[in-house]
Image (cartoon, rainbow, N blue to C red; front, side, top):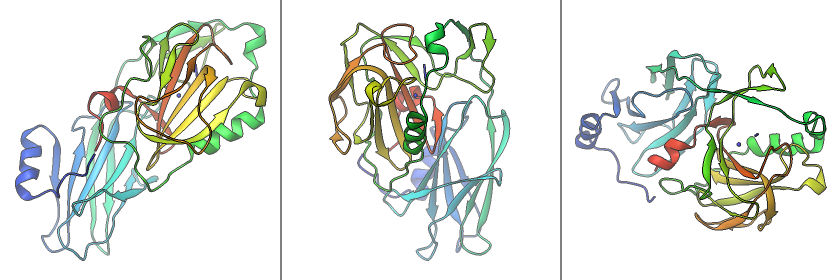
Length: 296
């Protein structure tokens, strides 16, 4: 239940090469004032993370702001090569269809990018919890997890594609909708990937990061069970729950593949497994694209 080295700056030639490779490339505005903007993926679907890279055409262009549908703003970070990047998360709760991404510079340098967010079919599961598991959770637990999910640090720890955090089989995919004890969970989706394996099987960090959350059943983590939260930087976070063992402390810096704990069945769990949730700017996104291709 619930959780690179920077490449050289984009030239006109590399933008055209990106377009030839199928990446959406939008060349915008007047040569003296505009940004070139690259969106990836070019055909996003529910659960995808959209990378918005803005390339100033002049040295006087300021760091842009990025908004979606005039209601949400996402932080931008310099990524080298005179480029700025924002990560826009999507989830199964978003309406599919047209979304407008605005790259906002100085003065009149606002650029509107229309993106078609594709629908996606998610399966439905029926879960039965015992009465002792149906009302788990403490305010201390909820407050700490909520504070963790709001972390946005300027450092970027991750580098390229993320790694699978467990060798166990994938038992529940991202985005699954559920009935709990016969009642449909409205506005719920499975926020992550589940890996089923024996209790004590190793759990590793999917990418480099800083341990920003450690929660234990003994400290009131009744719902999540033993929990580890990793800050990968720039609003990208991993949460690992239901652990039997925790091998790290808050503040530790971990590397991809480093063992940080072990699979268990603590908290609201129907059997031994790891739940890995990947959050981008507070929204749980599908981890699969981050493992398949990653983001620089």
